[in-house]
Amino acid sequence: MNIEKLRQHPFVVFGQEHYNPLGIVRTLGENGIHPTAFVYGGGLRLTSKSKYLKKVYEFESLDEAYYKLLKFIESCEGPRPFILTSDDTTESYLDQRYDELVDKAYFFNAGKAGRVTAFMDKKAILAAAQKHGLNVLDAVVTERGVVPEGLDYPVITKAITPTMGAWKNDMHICNNEDELRAAFDSIRSDEVLVQKYIVKKNELCMEGISSPEGCDMLITIASTYNYYLPMSYSPYMTVGNLKNPELEAKLSELMADIGFTGVFEIEFLEDQEGNLWFGEINFRNSTWSYASTCAGMPLALIWADSQLTGIVDRSLLRKVPDGFTAMVEITDYRERVKKGKVSLGAWLSDFKNADCRYYLGRHGDIAPVASLLGTSVRRKLHLDR
Image 1 (cartoon, rainbow, N blue to C red):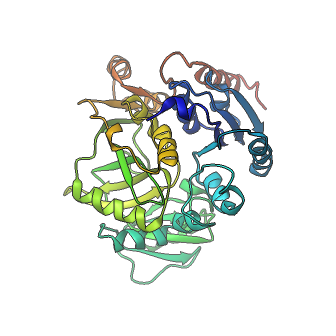
Image 2 (image 1 turned 135 degrees about the horizontal axis):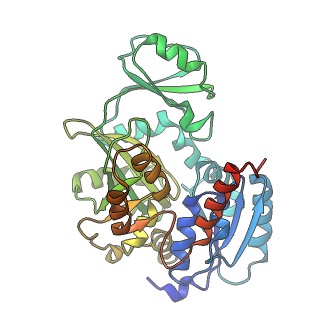
C-alpha cells in the first residue's frame, strides 16, 4: 500500500456525529492523513473533536452537509477525493446520487444509483444471502398492524430498512400473537420484517472491503462477543481472523453479485448448536472496523488503495494476535460494573488489557471523550436544556 500516494488525495469523513466516524478519523490520522469532516445531527460532539481533523464542518441536516460537500469537491484541485461514510442514512443518500458523484470522487457504491439502497431492504438481502447458500431464518414482510398467518413463535420484528421507522427501537421479541399486536403499537416503520427468533449463543461480526465492483473481497477481522445480550451487541469482544474458507467463499460470491465497492460489515447469529445464521450487511464503515486498524489493517486505507490500483492487496492481511480484545468502554462499564456483573477491579483489568478502545482510541486523542464526559456532567447538573 502506497501511503505517500494516498496522502496526495483529500479524504472526507461524511455522516452523522457519532463515535463510529471517529474510528475512521483515527484510522486515517494514525497513518498521517488528516481528513476533513462533514458531520450533522446529534447533540454529542465526538468525531468533530478529534485532534486528527484538518477541518470540520458541522450542520443541522444532511441536505446542508451534502450541499457543502459538493462545493468542497468542486474546489479540490489535483487527485480525486475519497468519501467515507459510517451510517446507513448517509450511505443511502450518496448511493442515490451516484450519477452526480461517480466522476468526481471515490465513494462506497454498487455501480449504479440506488443499488446499495435496494440491498439495505432486509427481504432483498436475505433472499440474496439464501441464493448463495447461507443459512437464513424464516421471515415475512407485513404492513404495520397486520399479523401474518402461520407464524412460528417466538419472532422478532425489524424495520424493513435501517433508514425507515425507529431503527433498533422497532425491534421486539414476541412470544405470541398478543405480544406481536402490542409491539405494532410502538413500531414506527410502515413495513415490518417479522422473523423467526432464536436464542443466540453468540454473534459473528466480520469487517472487510470489496473492490472493484465487488469482484474481490478481503475480510480482515471477525469478532465474537464475550457475553450475551438478547437485544443488542455486547460492548466487549474478542477479535480474530476469519477461519472459515467455505463461508468466506459464499460471502465473496454474494458481494460480487451485489457489486459493492467499499468498507462493509457482515453479521451472523450463532445458535446453541453452533450453526451460523445470516443477519445483515452494513454497506458502510462499522464502529468495529477500528479494531481492524488496531490489529494493523486499516480498512479505510486498504479500500482507498484498491480504488487506485484496481485490486485488493491481500498481502495486507495480518494475523490477529491471540486474545485480542476490543471494548466500548463507557457502555461496557455501565453494563457490567453498574449492573453488578463484575467488580470494578476485574473490569479495570479488562479495560487495561483491551487492545482496542473505541472511545479512547490510541495516541492521546482524548478530546472526544472529554467532550462526551463534559456533556454528561452538564446534563446531570441540568445545565443543558
